[in-house]
Length: 133
Image (cartoon, rainbow, N blue to C red):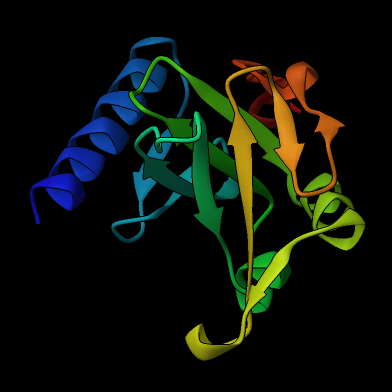
């Protein structure tokens, strides 16, 4: 439970930082916010032993969201990925968690790789432009 509470705090901290930067934010639910009129799914995870951050999403979220934000360890290390690009990454490779409602799962590494497809995602790191356009 402590990990989940820490994740919620980091999400709130990330949102507060964006608000201070002038973004218009309306929190819809624990993991979804509207930022500058865009639906944004924000998730947090801590570093695993293999130096990756594990995440998953749902096909429903892929249809509903405009942008995904993946917080890696804290609110200062994050990726902002537009939904169309997120779909392309998942199509390139993901682990499907069938027992969890067919959720595509993946990892982001410390060297900015999307795993399992080994795609460089450094252009999304701390890049807030998808929230502006």
